[in-house]
Image 1: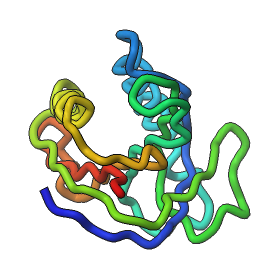
Image 2: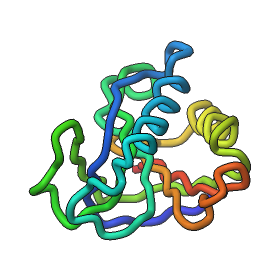
Image 3: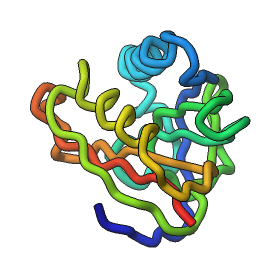
Image 4: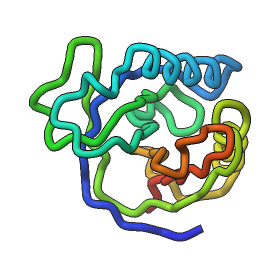
Length: 152
């Protein structure tokens, strides 16, 4: 694990409010991704800077035990044009601890990586965490996805 400092950046995409306490979190997020892909949402995002997809976790209600927003979207130049049905968010500047999930991201790779993160004893900020789906995730059954967790 390495720590990386990020400057703030903006993302626009689709979102769902979920929590880790029940078994629905994985289904909520899978459905969010399916909806994003089925609607061709990536092609509807104005001011998009790149085709890299982001899985974002933000607006934590009570750390690991409360509700939070999960967002799937793309990096944009600004939040001035958010299409109806989508949301915009800003990834906060700060330090992020990097984890990497490898394998089938449509099945277990991401949930298993997050299970380890949730059980770890990190000094987390619970402001914004995010996953980066770049060219290494073109084949989702053999993907490599970086996960950045906000830390103090």
